[in-house]
Image 1 (cartoon, rainbow, N blue to C red):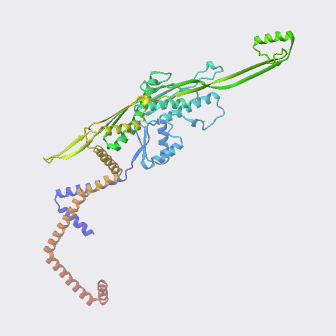
Image 2 (cartoon, rainbow, N blue to C red):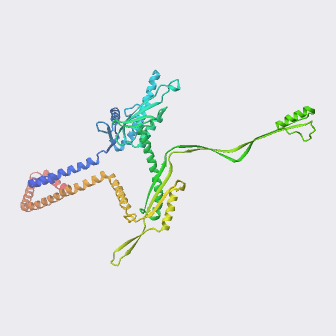
Image 3 (cartoon, one colour):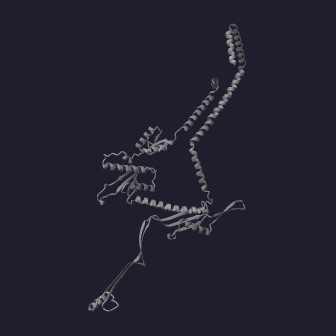
Length: 526
């Protein structure tokens, strides 16, 4: 091994300066390439554990990570904490169990340690702080909200009803993006439902730029919010009907060969109707009274009584003997049939629907005498359009009483190649899927590319150089052996002759040494 190293060193000494520099440069590149591959292969992939942290939460979380000997990175002036990817979910669960992050707000954990010496005022104040903190934590979960603050005003209870005041709340939002109307309504109703005695009309929302986003009590912003919700509901109704009609038409005519547009008139008024209907032709006996009286008398008194009874409408007895009287009183009460209805019409009922459907016609491809292909368009027949019209009416829920309108036409489309528009999208989606899968193995691919580049640019030239060096060494060694071959044989022969003479001299002078020498030769040969 030492001879090979010495020969290699001697060969390096014989090389010119340019080759020495090239060889050193290749060795340095080889070492740097291996070091880079090792660094990339063992580099930790850090992901965001928490962002938008307050200084208090950031300090507590970093302390917890140090106690567990977990590597971390702090960025964005301490508002973002990053940890290795494989530990991110475990850390979130464990830190959430400890109530972190608190986002700088105190929640219901303020009552974890109860102190019986606190006054009722302090207890009420702590409850309001805890409620505000919990609401802030919930609002901060919205993607568009960077941070928020909630202020709740709960008036003191009064003994008199007329002196009672309703609760109110104010919300300040630091938005990182525009907040949609539905999410703004969700935040308002979330706060209103969490506070006892608080109505959504008593909630005010502002942002950090000083803009009034929502104001209750029928303000302009509230009306705007309501109109946005109504427009969204109208669009949902139109889209649902459009999908129902268009999917049915495309299933018959072909994909991309039908266009449907829907316009819905929606009534957002909430109406309550009370109706009472009487039917005089239908009667029912409610109650009946039948009274009969009879009396016997005679003489002048009887006649006088009979005259009085006639005035009263009492019919005398049939005997007419003057000594008897009968009185009848019959009364029947009837009830007229009455129907009472209470009709509640909810907001969002459809007043009228207008649907327009355009269907592509049919095409026939014919070969012309000159060899070219000609495509001829044929419009749909009247019978086909009538069938399509019936299909559209069934799919949309046509109602003649609402005076719904339906129009079905057959027109040639600008791009008649059906279904071809979706192919690039599908191909693009498949390409994106493959690209995502490839990006999932980006570290392995980068390492393989670096190894291939290192082999092509460093290892392969180095192996070539080593091979050339080995060939040069073998050639020079052969030349050296040819040049010094005779001298070497003479030296060997001379040394062998000298050893024989020395052995003969020892054998003549000392027999014991001669025996030891012979034994040594025998042992070496064995």
